[in-house]
Structure formats: C-alpha cells, structure tokens
Image 1 (tube, rainbow, N blue to C red):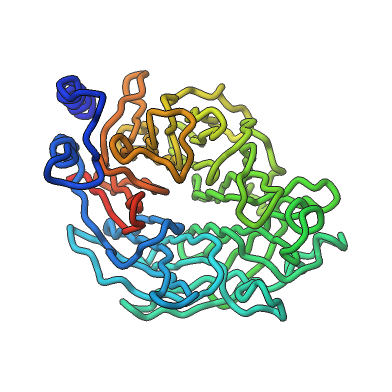
Image 2 (tube, one colour):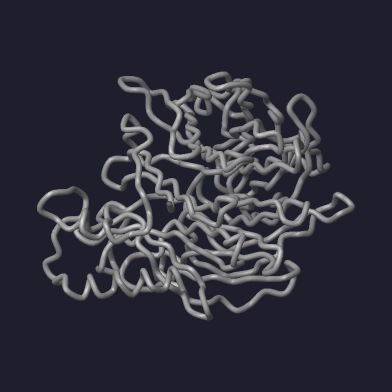
Length: 428
C-alpha cells in the first residue's frame, strides 16, 4: 500500500500536466523534472560526471548493504577505457576507483563475496596474437582494499573447457559479456566464447556459453551450452543469480557479432551434483535488446523480465522449479519503452520489481532518437495482483540495474541517457 499510495499521488499530479507539448525533462529550471522528481520516492545522486558515454554498467549489494557499481568510462583523449568501481554505503559514495584499463569493451559485472570483498569481471588480459582483439581473455579483478585491485585471468582459450569438438575447442576470444556471482567466497563466472572473433558462421553463430568456478587462483572451466555445428549463437547476453545455494542464468542467441541484438530467452541452472541443465527456451523473443534479466526469490522461485524490442512489449514470467514457466505477463507496452529491464525481488514482500526505460511516445523511436521531453526511468512492482508504476528519474535512465537492500529499500544504478553520467537512485 505504501507504493500504491505514491503512484496515485503521481497520477494526480500528472493529470494536471499538459501532455502536449511537454517541457523537456532532461534539465531543471523551466521544465518539470524537479517537480516530478520531487514526487518520486527516490533520492538521486551523481556518482561520476566524467563518465560520458553510454557504456555497460553493473550493480551489486553486499554484506552490510554495501552497494557496488562497476562501469566503463573512456579515458579522455585516448582510445582506452577504464573499468571503474564506486562503493556506496549509508548515503556516502567512494571516489571512482580504476579497476583496469582496456581498449576493447565487452560488458562488465560486479559481485560481493560473503566477506564483503568486491570482484569485477570483464574482457581483459592479453591479445593472444590477435590484432583486433587487444583484450581477449576472461578477467576477474578482486578488490583487496579501496583503490587496490588484483586481476586474475581464469580463461584464455576456447579449449579451456574442452569438448572434443574441433570448432568449440578452437579460438582465443573468451570472456565476452561476463556475469559473476558468489557462493560464499567461491565465484561463478559465465561468459561467451567467441572463438576467433571474425566470421559469422564459425565464430558468432558457433559461439558457446561457458563458465568457470573457484578463484581467485584456481578455476575449474565448464561448457554450459555448445553451439558448434548447430549454429545457435549461445551466450550473447547473460544474467546470473544465486538461487537457493546454486547459480542459475539466462542468456540469449546472438548470431551477427560480439554484441549484436539477441533473440529468445534461454534458462539454465546448476544442479546439486554440480552438473548443469541444458538450455531451455522459456520465451520466444524476436529482439532482446541488451538481454533478459533473471531474478530469484525463496517463495516465488525464478523470474525473468525481458522486452521484445520489435514490439516494445515488456513481460514477466516465473517458474518455481525452472522447468514449468508461466505465460508471459505484460508489464508495459506504450510507445517506445520497457527498455533495458532489470528484475529484482523484494526480500520482505516477495514481489517482483522491474526497472525499465521509457524512450518516447512514438513507437517508432530508436535508441538514438529518444524524446527528452518524455523519457523517464520507472519501476513496476507486482502488488496485489497488479503492476504498479513508480518514477525513479524524470530525466531518464539508460541500462538501469535494480537491487534491494536488506531493509527492503530499492537502489538503482544507471546512466543519464543524454550524457552517460553515472547515477544512483536510492529509496530513503
């Protein structure tokens, strides 16, 4: 009821605001950003004003409600990028920390182990004699102290997870778009194996989903989903969670390049005996944009949020056992929106919450033509059998990542759509 009451208040306020033309919401002063944000239950802070591109961002909540944000920022005047990390706790944010410097960008993921140590995963390491892929290895950097990071390289070649298949075991490009989670101090890192990173049929359509477990100095590799001769393009975009003591993930199929648009939602989980289930298609999607988002709750089970970019339809589906899945439930479909969904479950009320971006009232708007007058960052929560919307930021939010603190309060990391500035929204 606390969230429903706020949503009603916002609806009444918006009813008094003319729909056309609506003043730009990207700034302050004469527009209505401050007015709308004043009604929002979130407090917004800027974490890094020097990050000025729409590059990947990741979020994790650790022990004592430490909030870690990992992101990628171009180094001014160079072709290099920095993997950066900021920690927020009790209203205070650290200074940006450089985790690593790379020339090739391919996703970032962050997680905390049970002791409160943060780790960030990304495409790093060396070129392995490649000219194009200056970084081509799976990298995991551990935070030993504020500003002090130690890089580890768990995988360098496609045959680190041997299969006996010549195509699957061939190549040097591993570590694309990784996802990391912890069980205690044991890390699980899933990644896409792009083989030699050149050709559609051989490398992208033949890409595999692989995983390493262990760390920081000892890693056991495993093949999770092999494309090889089937040309399935597995592992395009990965979302992974710990679910009752075992990791589980969703990924999609990307056939055209290292990070093209994906299709379909595939689910896999680790069984108690250490083996993994085969890839199960839980939803048919024409265009997953940046991929589906997976969540887990002890009462609900698994949940998946995904947008079909071809129809701008955001849906939610769930499963208690990871085998039988509900029919997709429509969450949002109005204009161009429902983009970049991020799902998390309320640990107190066991409700699914989905953060997403509204781009434009025009259904044909693309990622480069969002309307600054109407773009906004929202969260929809399934409360009392209805999806209830709340505003997070009236200036919008690209690539948002949603999580819950132990108190049941929500926290969202995202980038300003117009500038790439890194922001954090916290529910007081």
